[in-house]
Amino acid sequence: MPSIDISGNIVKTLNTKDAKIYSSEIVFIKLRNFLNIKDDLLYDDLVNITQKRLDFCGDKLVAFGIKNTFVLLGREKVELRLIELCVYFLFYYIKIKCKNDFCGDCDECYLSVNDMLSEDNNKVILRIYQKIYSKNSGQLERLTGSFKNGSKGEVFFMQNISNINKKLKKPLNAFEYAVYRVSKTGNYSKRYGVFVDKRNIKIDKTVLI
Image (cartoon, rainbow, N blue to C red; front, top):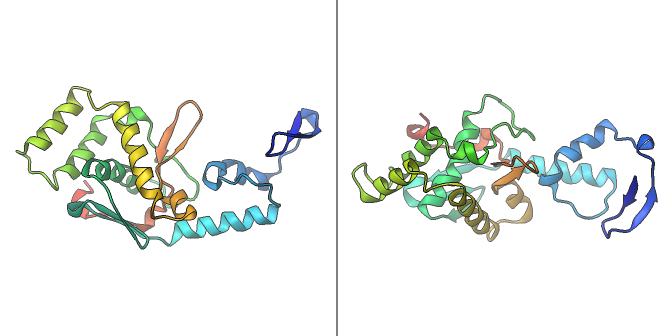
């Protein structure tokens, strides 16, 4: 098995049977998407960077201003289109509802596209939409109808996730963006969610049904 550096050069070749992964390294394998480190670093450097990012996850408040269509991420106020706010809210809502008390690098609350398209999750989005538009409004009726007839499918969610992440990236630094963006796990069966610790998510109790 060849050992390759970040430039693609073969450093040395090892037989697979001689390769070892120590338990302390497994943490970095599991967190590789979150770490997003492309440089060759010593083990101690990896530990320090990881700890800083995990510490950051633990003390930054997230609050939604539904009626004013913004989300407060730590000290940064980010304005989103209403439908983007609804989609972004969904990932936090599901995390709040997760049975696990501690998040860490857990991704059990991450959603597949099929999960996003479920009737229950569509209802969450519609409930937030209704905070702005009344039950009898044409906007709410059109969105409700589009979920029922299937016109709001995978493309709808992928476009909104992409737009959300673009808007989050502008005001946030690299650490903040890694925590707050809608990230994905899996190579084939992709699932989407946020890395934020659920204890720091503040949501109006009237939408936690």
